Amino acid sequence: MKNLRPLILALCAFVLCGSMQSLFAQFAGQVVNLSLDRYNSTPSGEKETVHDGDNLAVIHFRGWTPAATYQTGASIGVDVTDEPAPGYLPAKMTFYTGGMNQLPRMTILENGWIGIGTTTPQDLLDINGNTIIRGANVWFGLNSNFGDGGLAFRHQADNGFDGFPTDVLGINSTGEFEGGVYIGCPGLRVCGTLEAECIKAIRHLSANEGNIVAFGDSGMTIDCEEPGEGDFIAYGNNGDFIAHHGHFIANEGDFQALQGNVVANQDVTAENGNVAAPNGNVSAGIDLIAQTGNVHALQGNVVANQDVTAENGNVAAPNGNVSAGIDLIAQTGNVHAQQGNVVANQDVTAENGNVAAPNGNVSAGQDLNAGGQLNVSGDALIGGVARIGNITGDPGTHTLAVGGSIIATEVKVALQDDWPDYVFKQSYSLPTLAEIKRHIETKGHLPGLPSAREVSEAGGIELGEQQRLLTQKVEELYLHIIQLNERVEVLEKENEALREALKRAGQ
Picture 1 (cartoon, rainbow, N blue to C red):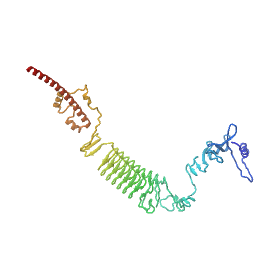
Picture 2 (cartoon, one colour):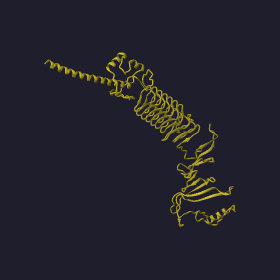
Picture 3 (cartoon, rainbow, N blue to C red):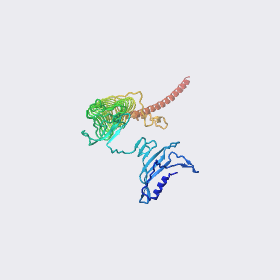
Picture 4 (cartoon, rainbow, N blue to C red):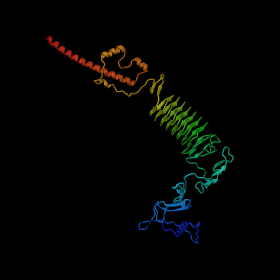
């Protein structure tokens, strides 16, 4: 520290001496300035400017401890926060406590921003940690663009409302706050059941631990002008319903998110209505059920980690995906994803309707049942047995069972065994025609091919294996034809020579 003022020298002398418990200074007619000066120096002793990050000063508040030493209890430090300019020195002040391990507790930046629990505040007051306000009232909006300000929050008694606890937090309860109460993202969070005459939600309604319940006229509605009979309606660009650990239940009405999402970590149930997000997603952590209505996401996805069920309606995501972690069931309607995929880890069932993904995939971890049509423009992924038509017998271990004829422009069978080109090798033991004749006379069928009895007992033939055996027999047949042709050519030459000899003898 350079150029300390005489007052500081005197103060230090008193502290080092320890002979006085109090220090008094009186100055008449002048403002007292206490300065701690700092500069950098060259090897020759010339003054140089301080730089960004340099420490200007630290004031320690110390006391004599049982270890016979002075120990710092608190301190104040000042650090340069940017490169200085003529007439300008940016700096921050930090307050430390914590005994031997001094920790920063509060920081004041050059622009006046104050950080408590953080050394990098992002606004005029930035508190990193819990905050306790022991006063009964909190006032907001003083001289703001939204109103003249007033009482925003108040700790009050229940005011006669049934079901309220003894102490509640009143929000704009007196009407003094002209700016109103705006609930933005992440929204209004409620632990328990929320009942109110009218709640306007610009974005989200969230119940982390409890339920959001609408009982009708006295329950929760969003449209304050025309309260409904217990409907959930969120207007705006971000109208999401979120229940992290609770349930959405509408016994007689609908779930509707016109611009946002219907989301629950557990159940979404509309017993006599619809679950719909025309421009968002319908998502449930466990079950998503519409017993007499539809589950519908016009622009988004229908997703559940367990079951998606529309017992008397449709499960539809015309421009998204229909996905279930376990079962996906529409008993009397359709399962439909026009632009996306239909996916379930277990069953996909449309007992009296269609399963359709015209531009996507249909995937089921277990059973895929469609009482109507199965329409897929992409891939149909089936982990179990695919049954088509009326199957009377047991398909056994076969993955595809068809009860009827099959027509196709092309059928390709990929064999695991070698194709029978080995017939043409020199080492191949070609059975003679006499051996084949004896086998036919005794067995009643070609050697190497299954008999009619074997085909009947096996319940059919394996197309690929049968084609391989037939190819082997055709190749053997060609070898016999080639051998016979060679013998015919030899006989023809012998006959031609005999005719020429007889002709010369007759002359």
